[in-house]
Image (cartoon, rainbow, N blue to C red; front, side, top):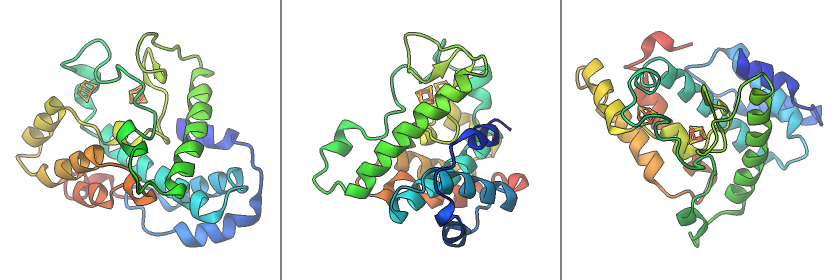
Length: 222
Ligand code: SF4
Ligand code: SF4
């Protein structure tokens, strides 16, 4: 799988925190197998071993969360993006939305140092992930988001919160139609997260998105 392939290329800098990180982060990841979650924790723990534990663990947690959201969106909501996007040619990828913190986030007087450091390190991981995917022969789509290739986004594990949670009205309606009106809670959680300011590590993700996805995407549960 492309995600594991990229993780396997990450320099392993410090193995000293792997056991502690595995113990701390083995909370249920309902849409990920134990093996995928463990491998991801191990690879990122060793790669980010030079960081302090709270930052390192929040970044790994974010990656586990985004991977699950990616699985959910790939199973249905992104069908419209691939086949019938109402905003051709590149849909909503018209700007550098991969940047983690928006102006409103940076202006937040309550901005936490851990969140700032997370944003910085995730930005570095984005560069690495995007470069890895481009090195597989993909080509950038010039003139739009700098992470957009001709065949789609070059980020999977470290999309920004706004990219990971954004669904246009067309996708929302398609989901409601498919799920016979039962997608309201999931869509509300996604919408709330994409529109909320980020001022602390917990603002990067929203467990409700996964919880509300379970009744809709139960077949994907690990
Ligand atoms: S979310 Fe909507 S606008 Fe964005 S790529 Fe998908 S279908 Fe297109
Ligand atoms: S990071 Fe990916 S999803 Fe987000 S705007 Fe850029 S190409 Fe689109």
